[in-house]
Length: 543
Ligand SMILES: Nc1nc2c(ncn2[C@@H]2O[C@H](COP(=O)(O)OP(=O)(O)OP(=O)(O)O)[C@@H](O)[C@H]2O)c(=O)[nH]1
Ligand SMILES: [Mg+2]
Image 1 (cartoon, rainbow, N blue to C red):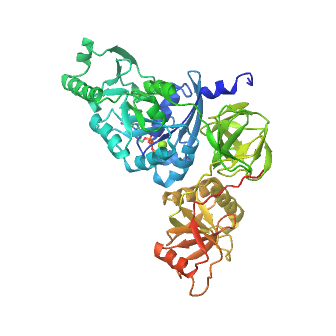
Image 2 (image 1 turned 90 degrees about the horizontal axis):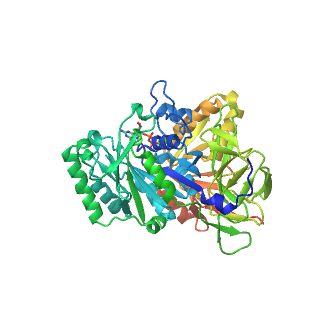
Image 3 (image 1 turned 90 degrees about the vertical axis):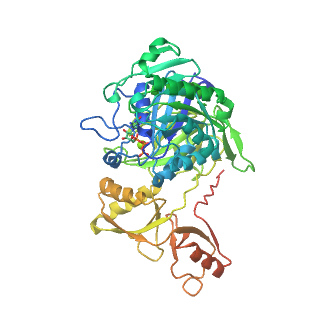
């Protein structure tokens, strides 16, 4: 339904676009599923580790994700909740898919950081936190798995502060943990929310609210649990962990919630608090063609703008198409509008933009800052492309991660060469893997370059299942890729014997080295050549 009467600023104010991040297995996909349940977007929650006959998790739609019970690629889910439009981005925790998570974070205005209550701050949490901190993304912390024996909640707060260096401000305080877990105390409303398990946690959890000193409370929690809860709460209240919204918006402090996604404990309370506290889309830095300095483009500015942060092929097995995910940054998207792809300078008419709900899609008539549009991509969009109407502008470039693992690829079934080429081209366009070619050799034996080894496995699997192509991978000893600026004198004593010159998909020269030492030799022997970082990604603005 088109309702162009709505002022852009009003529509923007109701948007909440957020990513869920954490170390693998903390429960991101499970929490996503429960948020969808409370949001009314699904009627029964699916399970990540597939219980027989149960529904499967909505956001882990890829076949390999369902087989393995892990997330491999980030997923966008848009749904309405309490008069708001939520754009939820579920991300994979595994570091080998970190680049996908990173790109997705660029599309988010805030993030929910999950912590496994038994484990605390884990290595991948630290890395993802560093990205959020660098970009000052407001963070909400959900301490999950309270239904299992946990570490002392005070210790978990200390760890957030000492390891991550962020102020931890609990809005809730847990009563017990594991078998003794009885619920959470909301410090703002001074209410105790007691929870009961329901079968498989797939239905709304019943919630009863009483006063903190209600005598029935003593019957619900044993005296040891109650004493521990009161001690912890006294410490928290004494330490002045008061919630400071400004500090949260600056990324200096995070509100902390406790719950258990799998059993629904605390999920609805969290969602309600999140909606009230999370920021709507804010201004983004944009560089206009010909300008020296970037300006802050307001989300309610009339000019339409957005950028491509992700491309995904074959989401819908019936259509086998490629979707470019566009984060809208300003203006109003209207069906059939024509926008410019600033990189190519070409105008594109957006006749069939869709809104995404995992692998499902629905044609969209209108979208505003914070929304994610899916555009069918017949090869015309690339990750990082800016789309806009009016004067050409570009958003910050999306840097590529440095690959550290390399493998040569052989197409086992020569008859399938066309599918092989198509599969390689599409998965490379997605950024699922980097693909290099040896200039003098046939293009049928490319080199894959990955940030993590699991990417090889995923690409091999997807080539088979999505393109019906069988490949063999042979690991290569390189560990570094550098962009080559200038012409190195190869073929004689000026080139390290173990180094290799290749090209990326656009024909730009890349040098592969086994070690820093080999790179230094190449630099010494070729003083006129610059070996720049692989992630250099200069975006030019066509006017
Ligand atoms: N006991 C308990 N288990 C949970 C809870 N939340 C999630 N789990 C389990 O933890 C496991 C991992 O959950 P996921 O939701 O797949 O975790 P994830 O963070 O999405 O994992 P990746 O996407 O692979 O990084 C699954 O077996 C879940 O059932 C919880 O609150 N309590
Ligand atoms: Mg997941």
